[in-house]
Length: 177
Length: 210
Image (cartoon, each protein chain N blue to C red):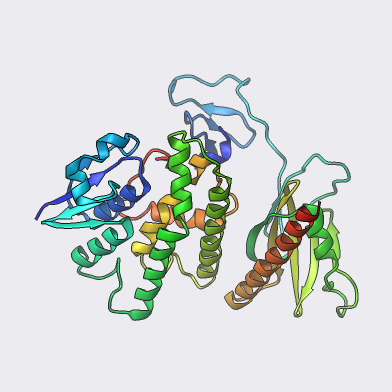
């Protein structure tokens, strides 16, 4: 049973299965079937170091070449969109787009190993690329600065079109293979 | 006035009707029909009410209705004097509610079928139906993502409608067939709102806690 299926009670996460509560360090703090018991220290789940930057939560993936989470910036959230294509294909496609700190001449900038900055009609869009599997990834999309709902809707529509392009070419290369 | 619901506890369509009855605060009786047992449900009495021998069937003072989307639309029209659940006087809202009801009856049917097949261990290739279900959930998530940018909390109107009731069970129960909700963040938020509707109740597969 994954803890992500559980629910938050105060500052603890409770497992959906038997309601065991865990604190932020991963230590079990409460077992509903034995309310008098202080749970032993051995009942503990793995805790991950996290950082909140630019509207996204960053977790070390344990992979090689991982750098620090990027600097925190003021952003407007758009959406997290799941795309059924190879993560490498998504980043290659995004990196071929115009960058925000040029006049559209230079390619998109890789801010960190998993954050890409691109220019879209004068807006700087930051995209956190989260690989899910060999053939699926999530793009966490924000716009730098303050923006209204019209901008968020426009960028969200752009993300849907991007999803369509990437999945269509993923299906094509899958069929060719 | 007496309302009788021919009901199978684990069926999504029956759950839609129970949700609607409960949200409207209407009392009713149920007749339990086990659709997993092929013989029992096809008794003559039941077949007279539904030639296909399917549930839900609603009988309200002699009126017999089949198809969950039609039943909840009828209940809203008949028992919601405020017309909140089915905004019949506003053609644009009414049209959108009907659009999503048809979507629930058409695009989301693969999700319902695949779940019943998985539950009763019917041997069949479920991959095509699962793919269709995921595609339908994505359309719903894109819609609610756009709605939220304008402050919208429900599929069509400022308050929940029969469209929200009809769309909720297939996605809420999709984990039964291994379709997680991680790819649908806007639907996850919407499903939490559904839980706040007075009269909301769960069925096996939808956790009591959240």
